Image 1 (tube, rainbow, N blue to C red):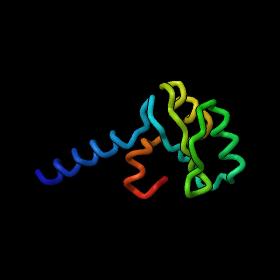
Image 2 (cartoon, helix red, strand yellow; image 1 turned 180 degrees about the horizontal axis):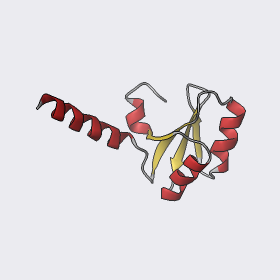
Image 3 (tube, helix red, strand yellow; image 1 turned 120 degrees about the vertical axis):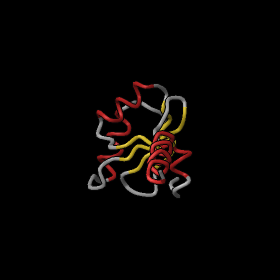
Length: 92
């Protein structure tokens, strides 16, 4: 019972961490990419840039629509996170 509750909590937490259209989001690129490659990839998705993250592979953008999220993944983003949820973990 406790394991089921824990797993349900995890699923809810992860689903709230995913970036949604109309909100700021964090693009998490491969950690072995240098800042130049990350910025090229982030700018290639044509989303408004909000900020550069605390690590070289993190960029904050405005997720205008679902196509923006798809383009982020195509450009190499491993994860597209909700910036508000990520802030709870200490991210910018």
